Length: 462
Ligand SMILES: [Zn+2]
Image (tube, rainbow, N blue to C red):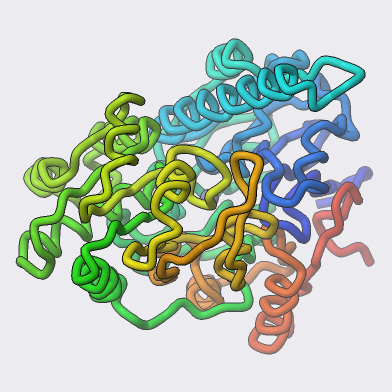
């Protein structure tokens, strides 16, 4: 179709990084923002959260949210705080999880600002949080929810629809149909065979694809995550140690509880106390419970799985468990050791050889988790350096992101391949590797590695 003004895509985040996901589609006079995430990890990235967007916030017509992870939703309250009054569309499960995650994020930011002011880190002016709990309440009022596969009319030319992406509960790809043209945003693409969720939808056709590339350079371990977990548990138990697992509240906590339940049920591990010391993890698990149609766990399994785990939300209770040095398994946030209760466990138990620190998820650049995985034997928290003497292990088989093979396998499901693929949400070597692979296998596709803040034409111009 003849258009006078070219449709454009501008990557306001997650271009060459894995956080701050925000993609602006300008089409037929509409400004559609897909995801609105927070930058995390390295300080120079986090500082971007304080830089104004290059467009005026009230010129955004609509926000489409793929899923509830902070790097996709964590900047929404800044929008609401600065006057955005339009709708934020997503699935109902995403809305519930986003509420939990944003409230936690606001609380951390309020506490950080308060601490900075108390300790006078900022000498000249008062530190302010990026947003507050109040801003989150304002944000949540803008949400409009939909089922998977339900078409939503945006204008006479544009409609959109959420498709299961198999990444976390409620997570979706966004399909945008403009007249005859289809633009597909993969969001975070799930595994070919997720542990608890239904696999990502096979899409048959799209003209343009915006594809994540978090694991664009990697193939996940073939090893069985359950067996690996069993081995780490038995080794730690033999040393009478504590197994500390930094756990993401959404999906990973529920997957671990499920695996622990299976190991327990088959007597593959001894009867060790298991704690979920994470109020956010407990809240997210309750949301899981509300959506039996979105995962493959039966009511019975869910009940049994909960019975094996002690939920700790109370702070005093948490402190008692932290101080106790008896063998146990602890699941606590945050998943990349950027804060939360897991730090207290590290503070008390990381110095002993009998204990184990086990990573079960992606560790972003600039995080304490990444530093340890890359060999650091000392990390800084509570204002001082601490030596790591405990065992450090990792199981990568539990990732929520498709690896290179799984991304390619999903692309092979297309009957009509996209003419153009924009690779976002990956560090430079990850998206480079994925581009090479796609170029090799599908030479007819134009693969673009977008740079932040530059508007790209959706279609190639002659
Ligand atoms: Zn995600």
